[in-house]
Length: 550
Image 1: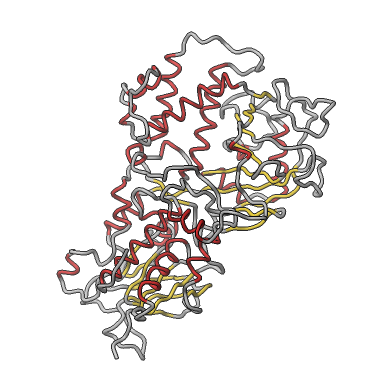
Image 2 (image 1 turned 135 degrees about the vertical axis):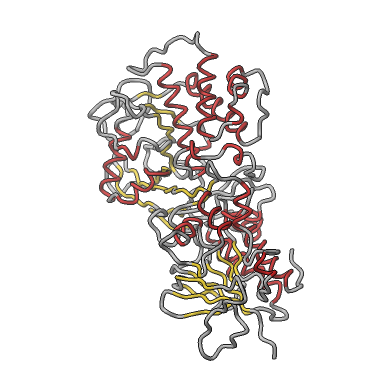
């Protein structure tokens, strides 16, 4: 009796479970494959991790469906009725209203100063992403930016700053502001612009936008329509994908330490006793010392782990991956984004709930630039590049703030007490003197900050994607020096099709396949990109075995 091909999928996140779901549902009637999913952690989901905080459903990792028009994730969530829930969840509807923009020193900024800079920034990003043609419309600043070489800039960060300079050149006759203390108009405009840059850092995971490639930004695609969160949690989609798999297919706590493969038939893998040495070309070592043999391995581990595993001092792959693959891994960017959840109490105690009269507003936060002598001394450095603090739904006392880059990594090292004190000091430094008739309300209005005013947070929960050895970060981006072609290279299977290795007589094609968000050229950094990549590799194997792939 002929043996069944064994397919081992490394990683039980969106890409891995999508591939497993497709392979199983397409062949279960004829029992074509022996399928195993090995997961290094103690849960499924990967960078999707739905949790709870103060009775509310939250997302520690992936949060948004980025456009509902044509999104496979939205389609699944709708089919399994995951878009409605009786339990409060992180829907972020409060931030869809007009947020308050508050500046260090206790000033609420008028729309007349915020809106022009916000519009400028959004238009510049639309140009960078190919949504708006350069030199379109009558905006002198945009024309000045794109006509002086800005469109061909190496990085998104450089392009944005050139746009801001062009804006200032077109607005030399603007009157100076009054009523904002030591803030000048130009300083405020720069700080508002930086606030939007910090938001963009969390969107892309690029800790520094000067490292984000300009040309590749136009290749990234989102789906049309609104961006929403999943009421019953992102994990409901993952659980649905896994639900079709028979018991035992998913094996938790199986961290892979090394993958041996056969790029050339002259170097066979050493096979343990009891196995046919002519059968399985790939040997997978597990952290407990056990070994799995496979015909095909779909690797869905994060780009961060691949970077660590293909370095000079690491031997995740034996023999090492070919240089075309390792160079793409090295060039692509992979950053850290963390979420910080806080419970706010108007009364400074842990009995606060969503029914309290005082409500915390959605805030956009503007800080003095790094070398300014006007900086509030009690605000910690790791808070100064977060751009917002907002309730996770209307009237919630659970607030959310996002961190990227070195600030996100610093957040992981801090104790809960340090975080609570730092955020409290930050928000208190943004507060004006409290109004007597609203003692418990954090009113934000134009005026001077009072050193005596203080906002208290009583509970904290944070993600730690940077230090988690199974991820070593959050998601990928195309760095300066890289390109979309590197994302295509990430997706190429090994041995490389049509390569010299095959010409030398390798009898085991498609030994190592790669999936995950960092292997999709236009949808990298997203869950639907991971989904598409899992389908791609499952279909590659189905077509190899002359099954019908969709």
